[in-house]
Structure formats: C-alpha cells, structure tokens
Image (cartoon, rainbow, N blue to C red; front, side, top):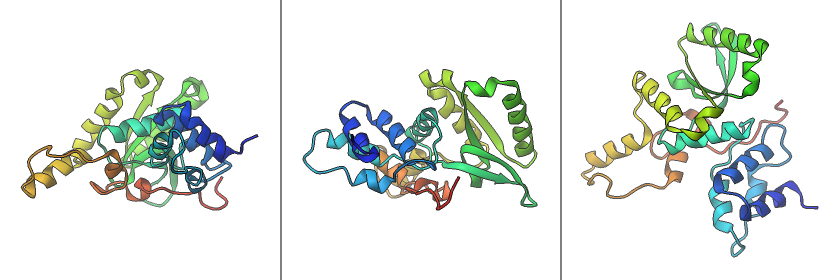
Length: 220
C-alpha cells in the first residue's frame, strides 16, 4: 500500500487542483500524518500530471479542518484578497482568550467562518452566538459562509470586499493595479499569476498567513 505522500501524488491524475489541495490540507493538518515538504518531495520531473501536483502544492496550508474550509480559502484568495491566516486565536484587550476562528485577517479584525451542518445544532448555535458577540464588542467583524455559498462564490468574496472597504483595506489585485499605474505601466498590461498573491508579493496584510507553515511541535 502507498503511504500518505505517494497516495496524494497519485491522486493528481484523478482530481482537480482544488480537490488535490483539499486532500493535501487534510494530510498536513495538525493531526495529519505528513508535511507539505514531504508531499512536495514526491513530485518528480517528467511524471504524468506533474503540473497539477505542482499547482496544488503551492496552495496547501496547515490549518484547514475541512474540505469546505479549503474551498472557502481558495475562493477568497481567487477573488484577489490577501491570504487569510488559518485558525486565528482572538483575545480581548486584557489578553483573555475569546475564540479561535477558521480564518481571518487579525490586523483588520475580520474573521471568516465556514459553518457546516453541525452549526445548526442548538448547543453549537448558542456557542457561536456567544463567541461572535464577544468578538464584536472587541471590535471584530465576523462573516459566515455555508454550503449554499459553494455554488455562488461571489457571495463570500462580496461580503469580504464590502466589509474590508470599511476597514481601509484595498484588495490585492487593486493594489497591484494602483502600483502599476504609479510606475507608468498601462492597466492590465500583464496579469500576475495566482502565486504572486499567495506569496505576499502584492499585498502583505495577513501577517504570517500567506507563508507555507508547518504545525508547531505538540500542537493539538
């Protein structure tokens, strides 16, 4: 039987890039059996579907706790926003822990949550309300996405865009166009690849979230 690394590489011939990223996110998660570097080591020049594997490895991150969280992150980044940090811990002004959210931009105090079906259970719903209220009174804006948004991604990115405008944030592609204009480059004279936005070259507003990260030793 194949180990997790080779199994991931073999899936490159069966899955889309997005699906392969979701598998990779699961494998490198805090309880996962491998690392991003170990997955990358299985990609060898000349093999079939190497382009799919290479595209996916650049998008895999530690922190997603479901395939739908992976989808949400990719949708937001694909809409031109700086990459969010994952599993963000939120504290109040006195340093007391308030919440841990799926993803967000701490410097802007914007959180983005994916709500699966279990969030409709009464206990979970009440917990979410208490958590969101504590974050709001401490200056955070909490946005939610659910399964229905999977078929209409503009809803999630639209919510982020509208909320970010009120918090002095210019989306990444708009930052690139402004910089090109200032340098005298004609608008849309060239398009930056998605990796440019993921590497933090265009707009570093998300702190360490845009970098490939390994789970810290002993992380739960």
